[in-house]
Structures are given as structure tokens and as C-alpha cells.
Image 1 (cartoon, helix red, strand yellow):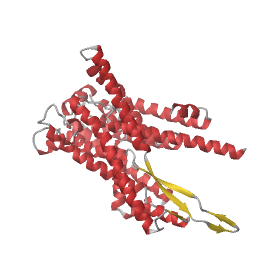
Image 2 (cartoon, rainbow, N blue to C red; image 1 turned 120 degrees about the vertical axis):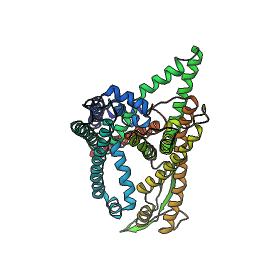
Image 3 (spheres, rainbow, N blue to C red; image 1 turned 60 degrees about the vertical axis):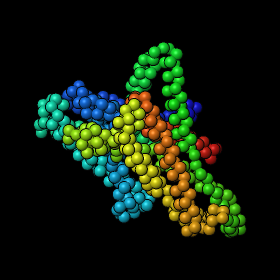
Image 4 (tube, helix red, strand yellow; image 1 turned 180 degrees about the horizontal axis):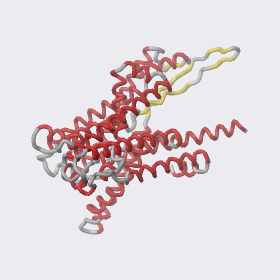
Length: 444
């Protein structure tokens, strides 16, 4: 990885893209520190602690900006929610499905609609938050006034729109997928706090130096093991052999070559995890603005309590272990979005038709419909394996956190996102360097 980055800095074009990306990320982190006028930040942190205790993945997604009530408090969460809505609507609305299949022009139209949905969600969330803060004594400096509502709504909406714009600028002028890169830097920004919390509880707080060293080695081994598992899951693929028939073009005999179709085990990447966690966190955040918080009494507070990952696998209090049923919904959402996102990114029928036009076939499988059915069958198997792998990696840290009663930001969800984004970005850098070398060879 470091060798790839070092070589990339030697190429002027790639170096400028990397510096541009770093510059934008610096703006993102600076914006996360700028407070919104009209909000009492100290009292807001106190209110959050009494309502949630730990914001968990929401604070991780926003890089701590939500807890600090900065102008980037919403961060890219409205865009993620809008993306989920648009991808679900592509199944329900035929017009959107046609746009998705319409190549580059259709993709741009869907992106344009996603931007409008993002702004709409940002306005809605901002208004709900400002009214919710106004109904909580002490959060708004001047109370619930029209000026405060407009100021907070405008600040949060502008911050969300600007974050979306910055992400798109990274995609166009920088390196990697802009939204994923912003999400990556938000997660990494909260790492020092989590490392400090673990160190204080298990290393410095140990009864002896030896126990502290053993605890540090165990924590390091768990992190390294998770990264290795995720890398294996991200790179694993099923290669389906493809043979191309020989045919005569003019006076030449072409074809007869063999190739393969690489089907990734984790085709959907980190998206199922992001979508599943976002959907489960959404009711908790919305309910908090109406004064309803997770609790073990009454129906809806109980539901919110079950949705909170911090309450799962609490083996020290077996009375609370029954609330681990929320993990069932989490697993269902993981599997659903794994299949759903794969169905969007990979179309077996389209691949089959393209192979047939080029004279290609899978050995032992007839071209056309039998090839489509075979690819669908294989894809369903490997997507299920990928979803199970994601579930194992995602649940392992939650189980450990429940056993040892510790809350950290770099759970499996965060590590999956970090490893996935880093691998995708490195692959893009290597592709750019490879294209440059090819151009140099051809120009010579």
C-alpha cells in the first residue's frame, strides 16, 4: 500500500489529484469544528448523554460533528439516506429503472434527482431538530423562536449540501469515490478517542503491568484479525470460465481464446452494512427529537432499545439479553441489501447477451437463457456466502463489546468501511498508473 502511494506521488497528475483530495478533506474537518449559532453546545452534550449515553454509529458517520453541533452536523447522512431511497425506488418505479439502464445520461439524471432528495431530507431533518431542540429547555440559547429555527435549518441544510458538493468534487477532480472518502475520514477522526477509552479501561486501568500488556496485545490481535478477515472477504471471487468460438473475419481466423467472469463474493461491498445500520439508527434519532428515548418500559421505547446495537449481547445482565433480538432485524437487512445491491450492480441477463454477441460461452452451458440461469444460480450462492461473511465480521466486535461492556467507534462496521474504501482507492490509483505506463509505451 505504502509503495503504491509513494510511486503515485512521483507522477504529477496523480500527485495533484491526491493533494486536491487531502485539501478537500482538510476543509471537511475544519467545517466539523464550526459551531451553529443559537445552540448551547455544552448543554447539548449533556442532553445527548442523558438521552443516549452513546451516539454510536451516528457519531462515527458524522465524524463527531453531530455531537459538537457544527454546521456539518448532518454531514453526508442525508445523502446516504437519499441514495437508499432512490435505489429502492428503482424497483418500484419503471421510469427510474429505465434511467438506470440508460447508460451515462440515465445515471446523471438519477444523480440529479438524488441531490434534490438529499436537500429535501436535510431541510426536513433540520426543521425537526430545531423544533426538537426548542422543546428541550436549555439547548437553544434564545428558546424556540422563528429566527432560531430559520438559522439552524439554513445552517444544517447548507452544511449537508456543501458536504455533498465536496464529495462530488473529490470524485471528479480527486482520487476515489468522494462520498466514501468523506465517510472514511469521519470514521478515522474518532479513532483516537476510542483508542484512548480502551487504553484507559484495559491497559492503564489494569491491576499490573503484565496484565496491561496482555490486554493491549489482545486488542491489537482482534483488530488485525478483523482487518485480515475483511480483506479476504473483499478480495474473494468466483471465476467462471468463458470460451470464445473461432470465427473467420475476412481472411483471418479470430477467437478461440479463453477468459473468465470474476464474480466477487462480496459484490455489494460495504453498502449493506451502511444501509442496515442507517435504517436502524433513523427511528432512534427521530424519536429523540420528540422526547422519546430507548428504555425498557412501554412499547415504542422498547423497540428503540432493541434497535440500539450497544444493548446487544449484554451477558453481564441476562435480564437485558432478551433485547438482543434486534440483531435478527440487522441480519435480515444485511442479507436483503446484499442481494438488492448486487442485483443493481450485476445483471446476469445483460452479461449473457453480451457473451452471446461476442461468440462466448461457458463450457457445458448453452448460450442465452441457460447461461443467464446459471449465472443467477452461482451469484445467489456467492452473495449468500458474502452476506454471511459480513454478518460474522459485523457481529464479532458487538459480541466482544457486550461481554466486556465497552463502547468504541471502530466496530466491524467502521473497519469494513475503512478497508473497503482503502482497497477501492488503491485499486483506482494502480489503474491510473497502469494507464499512464501504457500511454507512455504507445507514445514511444
